[in-house]
Image (cartoon, rainbow, N blue to C red; front, side):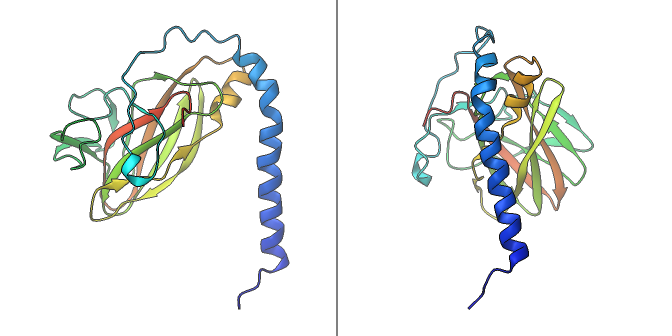
Length: 199
C-alpha cells in the first residue's frame, strides 16, 4: 500500500492553503468587479456543447473559435488546417481546425468574461500537448496543459483566476484564450468559453 510521505503531504497542504487564500481574496476583488462596465459583452448564443460528456454548463463559442474563418492571431507555425471535430458541438460539423507545432501559438480575439470565474473548454486531437493561458489585458496566466489523443475529445475544463488579478489592478472585463504548442502535433477545434460560469 502506498503511503504519502511528509513532503507530499506538506505540498498538498501548501496547495490547499493557496487555494483558500485565493478564495478569501475574492470578496475584495468582487467589490472592484461591480465597477466594471460589462456592456461590451457580446450576445452570442449559449449552448451546452459538452452535455454528452456530463458537463451541463452553458458555453458560448469563443470569437472565431470554430476556425472556419481566420480570426485568431497565429505565430510560429500555428495554422488552420482542413478537418474538424466530428461531434458538431457548434451545431454542425465544420471544415477547419487549428494545428500547433511545438513553440507555436494562437490567440483568440478578446471576449467579455465575468470578472471572477471564466472557464473554457475545447476539442483536441493528434499527438503531444498544448498549453492554455488566459490573457487578460497585460496579465497572462497559465491555465494548464492538455494532452492530445488520437481521437477528437473534449479537453478538461480550464479554470483560471487571472481576472481576479486584473480586476485588482484596475483591468477591464475582456479576455483572450491563448494556445501554445508544447510537443507533438496537437490539433484544437471549437473553443468555448463560459463567460459567467453558468452551470
